[in-house]
Structure formats: C-alpha cells, structure tokens
Image (tube, rainbow, N blue to C red; front, side, top):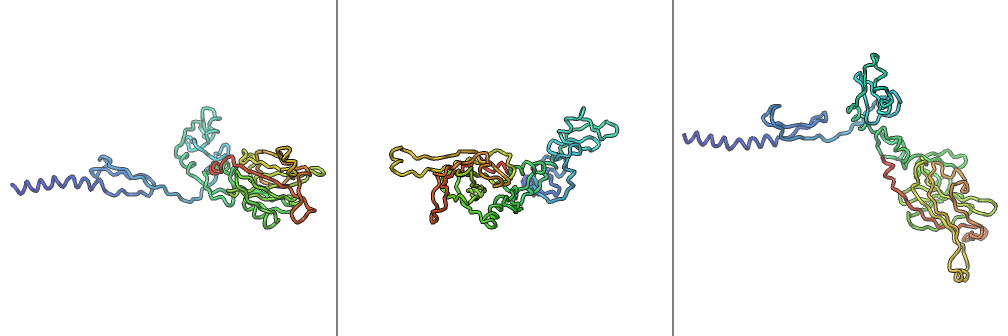
Length: 327
C-alpha cells in the first residue's frame, strides 16, 4: 500500500511539470504569414496559451499595372478600395459618383459596391522604387506622384547653350563644374559668406550643408547696373519655398566718411528663394527677385585692375527639412 501511495504522489508532482513543458513548446512559424496559436490539451478546443506573430517578410514580385488602377478613372487605387459581388473593383472617388453605389459593369444591375479590406491591404503594401536616378526610397505605389513632386533627386536640365544634359541636382553641379567650368563654392546655412563675383563670371554654383545645389547668375541690367540672382536647383518648382536668402553689397566708403555718418551705404535684397528645374535658363534680371548693384558698388579685381567685381555677401537659411520629400 505504501508503494502505491508513493507512486501516486510522484504522478501528482509530475503533472504540473508536464503542463509547464507543454506551455513552453516552441511555437512554429507558418510560411503563409499567419500566427500560430498553441492550445492546451492537444486539441482545437483547448485554452490558448500563447500567440506567436510571424516576422514580416517582403518579396519582389511582378504584377500587372492595371491591377493597381481603377478601371473607371484609371487612377491608382488608394484605400478604401471597393468591390462588387461579381469582383469588379472601383476607387472610392468613382463609387461616390455612382447612383446607389451600383456597379455598371454587372449585366443584371444587381451588383453593389462595398469596401474590400483585402484590396486595401494589397494596395497599401505595394511599393516601388522611386524612378529618379540617385533616390533610394521605395514608395507606396499610389503615392509615387506625390513623392516625385518633392524628391530631391528629381532631374534638372542644363541650360548652357547646345547642352542637353539632364540629371539630379548634385550631378548637375558636377556637370557644370567639369564640362562648363562653372566655379563651385560651399556655403553654410545661417552663416554669412563673402563672394567676389566677376561681372564676366555669369554663373556660380553654391553647395549647401546638405548638398543642395544653388545657381547664382550675374547679368547686366541696362547699361551700367549689375543684377545678381540665385535659385535652388530642384524640379517641381511649384512647391512652397524651402530657403530664404539675403544678399547685399556694401559701398566701400573712406573711413573718414564712415566716421562722420556712423554707417555705410548698402544695397540689399531679402527674399524667398525660388526653385527651378532649369536653373540659369533666364538672366538674373528675369528672376522675380534679384539684387541690383549700381556701378559705384563694384571694386577692381585683385591682380587685374581693368576687371570689376561685385563684393557680395550672402546668407541662405533653410525653412524646412527634406523629410516631407520622402513620403
């Protein structure tokens, strides 16, 4: 009897251990992307002890482009997507224009559109690489157009006569420097830089802290006045300004005159900088805002007293980051 009682006691002590082992079973990763539930009791009716979520895995696939476009308006689908009982899809904008949300493709006229979560998931998870050279971002398919409007790698065109080069702004800056010998200077946002611009230079490339490209143009305004303008080399120029710019030139006045007056004369322009996909396409005076430099503000060039220069001061400030370009 004592032996039987001891055996029963051992079995009772072993039961919790077995229960613990069953609760600690390794959860299996299912290849179809669903979650695996472990149930007690070994059957479907047991209590759920834990849920294991499968790590998301992305695949590169080919898909018919028409699948991602509404057959009614031909625009890319974006959630919510609708589908009738016969399987005809439509975007929310088209469904809103249909009487009673009724599908016109259904022969019997009995098909009504309803939201389709499965298509929403497909549309939201379909991403493609930005088509602009140099951009490494993958964007949701229906947001590609929005991304391209602010993409910093959108192509710009070289406007030098007879040149048909097209490339990203950074590549355009290298092209102007190596092919057309346009000088390049680095500037820091929020800090004043002094530039000695020859009135015969015509072009100067400025590189910002984040490699944004600016093109400064020097041109004649009338017989004697010099005009200076600057634009940001960026496509989709319809978007809001990203930079402000101050440019000014001080009149080199003898110290004795400055001491009597208390200040120097200067000409200054404070502007929101325009963006352009064809920087340099127009002369400086053709820009909406530019700096006018009267002839008395010019100074002789160092080493060449016959040439004149513009002793220009410039400060560029950034209004907003590029983060909203990477949607």
